[in-house]
Length: 125
Image (tube, rainbow, N blue to C red; front, side):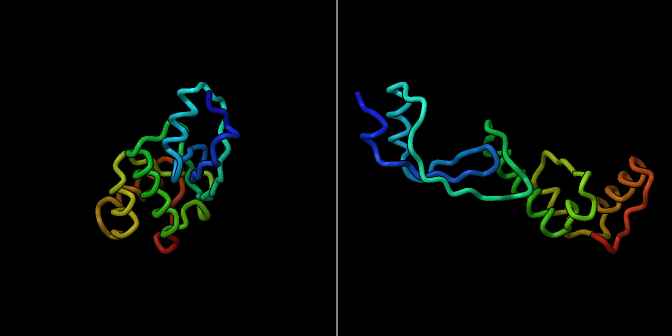
């Protein structure tokens, strides 16, 4: 039987509540097979305004990455901290961030105004 002390620590990235194994997948497999509840790890945490759920799949990672890029470019999280835009298609964040005069941007402005009763200044995004 293998114990946690018999194995060197694994290396993981932490994004929100999700962990990605960088080095040590085989050790994780052995630990699970042996019924171990914990394993030593070196953790490198990535702080981001957009966290991931523990059940995150590739689609969520890609979508949240697009949202993080959108927030960086538009500063919406700073300008309107209590509001967020949720797309299921990650490409829509990029479209909205770059097409200020295009249909998607105008639709966002109209929806925001209709829902919140405020006019969002075009120059602020």
